[in-house]
Length: 608
Image (cartoon, rainbow, N blue to C red; front, side, top):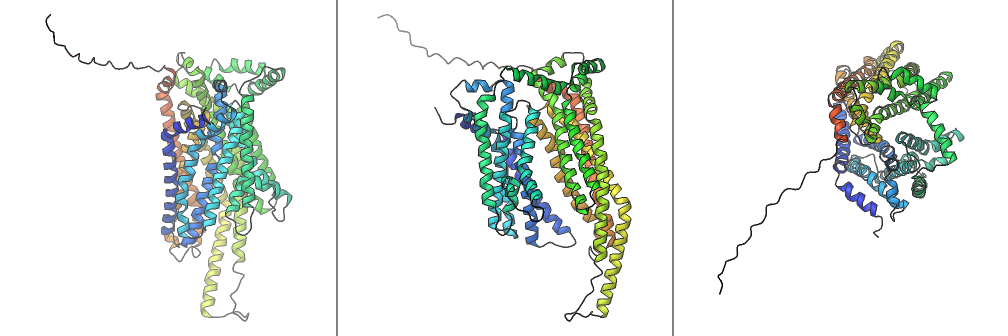
């Protein structure tokens, strides 16, 4: 028997897929566009950055984006690869042969990770340009490359481990997300809590983020030790997946499993009375609305995230330290990303499962129209997630207002303390010259104007920022819902639908909006910046954040309106055609009729 036959087969299949080639091309194009954007921004600015500084910033941006993509690979590619085989019942046929658990696990690892490895390797040549620009050493480049590959391998191994013990796609994705968060942040968080004065990395060596951060650190770091520990964790997860998969691919009918099944059913659908009341209320209005509203655990998970966001806001409100409020942006951003991921997954999940189970075929032969089906799914999303999302929006607005007020107070205090430093000579006496007096007077006047602008901005700028952030989040959620439904109708599993939704609605537009806003705002403020530099223009400090927030919000609203209108139109016009494409049997074409070859005629001879 050939060693690892599934690995060889999956590699041959993956080499023929178009996505294997397109993903690395797109990754290289994105990295090249980011590098080009940095060069353009440095050229149009009022002051030119040094080449070494520009190379260092570009290196940091590309590597952090690559780290995020590497850590999310297991979430989208491997978290449902084995559980999907369990649901379809094809995993048992593999174990009827001579195959072992490691054959299946390594085969799935190769099939799902090849595109991710190609994408990471495609970014490395663009990343190596920073070596020529300066600011980055060769050791930093190679150690960072190893850290990225390490994060990718650990993420894929974590996804395989969760998929080996799961069956439901959303539970597998949620379990993978929790495991990745623990691996990435639990160690550094515990080290920071145990040693608040000086950070001592002990448990941080288990984190792929610490491996990445220590790869660019100067002096003696624990990079190689942390890299070895991360590899041991990854291989341990792979070994556990190989051992557990042959034992968890089938459900055993025991008393414990039956009792657990009843508990899971109660947690998923609630009790009999609630189900009867829900059926009597909605099945006459829209049967698909009733079908989509049956599961209550989706809303319960969203309520947990909402309570976390509100709890973080209350904890920061009770804290009086100004530095605590500066972390609100990171906390709110992480929770918002979690909300986006959950909404994108839930929007397309029902359509994916309906195609797999054949429910879509039953819906198409009922008197239900396409408009009623689509509106039923949309109203179900509003009914389950409307209230917790409204609470999240209010919490984000309040937190943004308070954080912005604290930030403006810090800037005003720092600007007020600058003019107190008087120019001195080497002997310690004040240098009283005409030039010094004029310069000091000019700088004091500009600083006073800046401080006055800060106090004026403190009254209305936080409110503007909070409103724009809430509008952006609301529009993004609408776009994720409608485009997620369309992707669920055009995808084979929930993870692929979620990945497509997040990439097209959030990730790619984020690059475009950031680049456009970063290029247009300096161009609009160019007249102010040319009047003697940024520090000489107090209006710049007042108009730059306002224009950035407004322009970014307008671009996001345009993007989201386009996605909502386009997805809604496609769902109403092509729902039946897209659904029937997966329902109708494949018609085998008969082979072409071959013409009979000409028969050579033999000469007829007479009898002798």
